[in-house]
Length: 122
Image 1 (cartoon, rainbow, N blue to C red):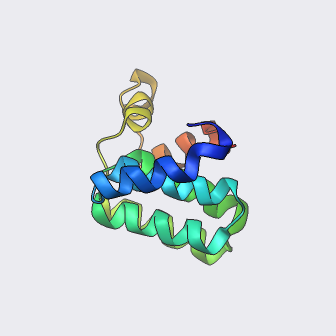
Image 2: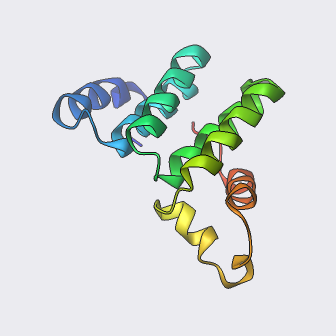
């Protein structure tokens, strides 16, 4: 990520150029998360997974976010929607899902494992 003081400007520029790119939307969600704007971060995570439900990295970050800031109901909802979407893409998602040790794991198990490995954005 960009230096703290330039993140918002870079995010606005990126959104203007690529408003329907899941990577950009995820970066904005993480930006709001780092600024402790919980409601806005949740909205941007929802936008991200709505635009690209196949993007596993977004689901994992969304689930990690809900583990820290959401209720059990919200966590279960993210997990349920992720199961329905069955994501297959994302750099981090594929590192876990294509690991030989995880070949029999279901989507929800991969989601939980990846969320545990993710660092909280700073």
